Image (cartoon, rainbow, N blue to C red; front, side):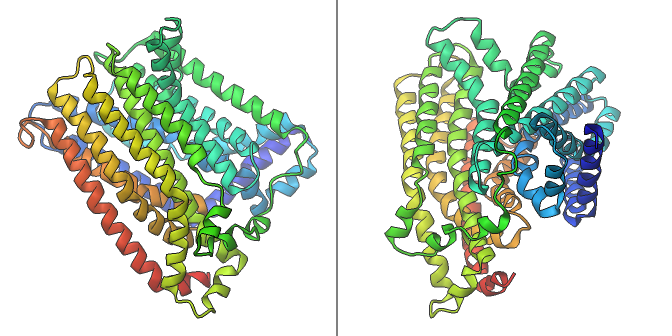
Length: 516
């Protein structure tokens, strides 16, 4: 059997499995409806100072940024756990029998996953046509953004292959893929800011900034701050370079390990992690490795970049530094949501949860014990993140950033303070909603997406909706300060409500969910 025949077989099987899944059609329908509704909202919201073409261009910019971010994170969903996924569908044994070299194997996996991921970009087509009718983007903008989306998607899938090959087990490949993607999307530009402020070679700073597709998106757009063809070509080339390096690393890691990984889903289900999480005392919490060692270097690096960016004359440097701080907080939230999703899910897969429900302990007591274990594990890293924000506030009070007026400094201080509070408000909501989503969702990744989308993404969505209404009629003064207060109020109220509702619902339905 030739390599091309195997690749065609893999692509056909991958598309067939996706076509038979009900979740595929539901997800694509929801994405299409959400995209069309978002564009209609962005275009039709009352903004007296903008013409119709300007509204269409604003909607296109927002859509482009969100799409690039989604393509940058595609590796987590599609390729990081491809071994376990294909083992469940029966494709992995046939692939092993084909006796292919690692390069040919990884090439077939990348081809199959890339074609499947490209089909998920189809909902963007009707939205792009709608915006073209409104004369929002130019044809050049549309082509550049389309090229950037495809390039980012392929590079992210390659990074996912590398992350999946770096560790065995569901926790390791997901965590390492997220770290690799976070380093590519956010930390390379943040490192460029630190390099520039520390007096490094002047030619390195633009290259590190251009390595992120988020920075390339601004170069792909027309306008006062965009349309830089030189930076756009450099960014696309660097994204392709990242993808090639990640693909080569995945092929190198698979050499000598092929056939030995991944562990089967049954082996993961029988792991002792679930039994350790079942405990209610401090011994169970100490049995798990604390995530503090993962969060500590990220938090310290983000704080260092922020302090260095305070003296930068470029406003974009401070924006990347704030993005690094938020990424550090988001890393802790992702880890907490992921562990919460697996806490009850693994125990149900091994049958331990049903056994625990036959004991004299009530459902509320079992859930409270699991929540205490999660709380004990994540209290140190979340406390460190809160101290990072406090230190950033102290640094901001000692040194005013250049080019940032009093309103901007006040808004930044409010954002740091509210982010500190939001860290502790989000933690119970992520834990309770994550445990519930882990039992209800079809996969652990689906549960993670539902948890983060509800607790983390919804406040930003509400803030974006409020921002589109601003035509000088809603926030006449201190607009950014008002936005920061709105974000804090929306996030706090949502976290409290979601946490309580998820806890009560999970306590009521635990026995039914444990039965599968």
